Structures are given as C-alpha cells and as structure tokens.
Length: 480
Ligand code: GCO
Image (cartoon, rainbow, N blue to C red):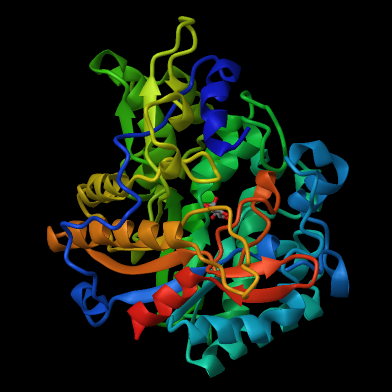
C-alpha cells in the first residue's frame, strides 16, 4: 500500500476519516499550446533549488555516534513494512559523498540546497547528550554549500524521530513539546549564523497520518485513539519551532512545509467525502498556524483533538511564518464509501480512466492542473504568507542506457507542465517565490524502498555511481 492508497483504507480504521484521488489526466507531452518556458518569466528573484531529506540519502545509520531513529527501527525490526524489505543503512552514502553531490547541485545550476538534520545524529537519545560528530557533519555540509555558492535551506524535522523518544510515546506524548524545543534550540543556535532559511516540519499531515493512523510509515502504528494527540503536538511544535528560529537566528526566513493535493469529488453527491479529505490532506495544519484553529466542523472524529488542548494552547498554535512550503505531486478524487460509518474513499488512478503513461511509479496521477488548483486554494487564505514550492517531482522507471545516459523524457514533460501551471498561478497573483525539485538523487523512498526513483541524478545503489539524467540536463539548460 502506498501513501495514497492508505487513505482509502484508513477510513475504516478511524471509524470514518477521509479519502482521496485525481482529475483529468494532463498530457505527458509538453502542452503544445503553451509558449516555451523561460526562467526569466518567473522573475529575477525567484529561487530554484533541489530538496532532500536526511534519512533518504545519508546512510551511515549508526556511524560516529548516531542514535537509532524510528525509521532505522521500522526497517530493521519490521522489514515487511517496506515493500522491498530494504532499509536506508547506506542509502546514497551522502554522509561520505556530500562534497561530490553538492557539486552536482551547482553543476545543474541551482541556487538552493534543501536538506534536513537527522535528530538522532545530533542528539542520539533525542535529548540530553549532544553528539559532537553529528554537529560536525552538518557544519561541513553547510560550509560546502556556501563555498559552492548554494544557499542552504534546513528542515528541522523530516520524519526521523529518535527511537529513544518513540519508546517514551513519541509524538503522542505531550513531553515532545519540550524535546522538540530542546532540539530546535540546539540546531538553530549552532547553525543560525550560516543558515538563514529554515523549515520547521516536513509534511505533518503525512507523517502523523501515515505513522500513527495508517501504520505505513514509522513508527508503523495504527492508533486512531492516539492520533488526535499526535496532531495537536505536531501543530504545537510547528509554531514553537517558528518562535525558536525567530529568537535564535538573525534575519531568518522562516517557513514550514505542507503536503497538499487538490481534492475533487467523484460526483457531486460525493462532495461531503471530498470536503473531509480536504481537511485531512490540506487544512489540518495550515489553519492552526494561520490562527484559524482546527478545521473540525462536520468532522466529529477530529473534535477529539480538543481533549488534548490545554489552556493557552490555541493561541500558541499560531505563528507568522515568512513563507509556507507547498509540496505537491498529484491530485486526488474522493468518493463516498459504501459502508455508512466509512465516510469517504479514494479512487485510485488505475481504477479510473487515466492513461497508463500518466500514472507515475508511485501510482500517482500526473496532474499539472492539480498544482495550479491547490496553489489557488492556499493563496486564497487571508494573510497567507508567500509560497515556496518546496517539493515537486515524479518517479518513473529510469535506466542507464548502454551509452551511459538516462533518458527520462516523461520527467522532463512533468516539470514543463507543472512549471507552466505554477507560472499561470503566479501570473494570476499567487505570491510564489521559488521552486525546489524533489529530488537531487534517486534515494530511499520510505515504504516503497529504492524502486521508485525521483532523482535528477540516477544512483546505482551497488556502486554508488551517479549519472545525471536527461531531466537534470534539462534543468541545467533551463537555469542557464
Ligand atoms: C514527502 C517527503 C519526501 C518524499 C517525496 C516523494 O513529501 O513525502 O518530503 O521525503 O520522498 O514526497 O514521495
């Protein structure tokens, strides 16, 4: 089951939560009616970059004093949770190869390198004793970026909670508010002199739902009773992380990121299902951050969040972010489920009238209009901060040809079509300041293992050989 299939399934678990899936397929060929894309159309100060995450690329899972994370534990102890039984013990070996990989980012012409800190590399037990060698690694990585002329953008939390904290209840334990603050204080005080662009959390909706409701991602729990507490704690950390960066980093540009997918009902009569799914996928974390509270109207299950709200919490959920990171890959189509207590269900692209070429290796529909619509949806919030697209990309089955090339024309078309739609939203007034490709290297795609390749650079996981794909060369040309 991948993350979007999970939505269909989770509805049953939680006594009726949500659902999802897609729209009219957009052609994989570049739209002929559209004028050729030019970097300059996006404006001179528009930022271009690539995004990565520690667990997916670093490897060195227990080297130089690093502690175990929930992803190490999931892969090692419950390998069946990963479709291929793989783990990220070595991954792309970025821990040792980062100088070469940073050079590749520069070679392709990007300005921004987004990475995340592995909490357990820095605080092996999640709190208390600091691992100096872990700090040293990020020190060197940041310096490497700066020397290459790349702006380092750091994510504080990209899903790899220290296992020692999980053993104490993880995100379900309110003590996480203190643990997270300690960690956020440490990294911002340590690196805030050189890192000015920060993201607090990566996709809270994804890690809380998949990790604590769907049992698909670490910590692999199916815990509908705990989920409301997990949501509240993550939303509290999201805002307090923002305040910590503001206090510790001079001239900081502070954001946080949201996974989001435009939701459409399969038919008009399925609108209620689509609305619920929209809450879970798109509204649950942005609205408290904007000071709008939790979107629990017509969603009784989510009202259980309030049981965990203490005096003063509602005010603390708000933070004035300098930017919001939107991460989008596809759209989703919702339909009402048959069983009355299951409110919604997801319609998979394969089960709809979507041409095969428009379904990626993740079983996600290629939907450029989807990114346009979701940007418009977010941009419509009153007081919405500027948007940065902090992730967008696609997995296709890439192979290195006998002559050493990776012809990934489908991915090039994907970028062209999505960028076209982003530009359209921007020209219509959405305040979009940058775009980061997911991702630099083929890597460990969580529960999917290494099979689904998202990189601009192909990685041979046996030899660790890197090959820039045609899409990477396309970016090089585009960014010139
Ligand atoms: C996420 C993460 C990335 C994924 C990417 C492709 O959004 O899930 O930030 O780690 O690899 O989205 O699924």
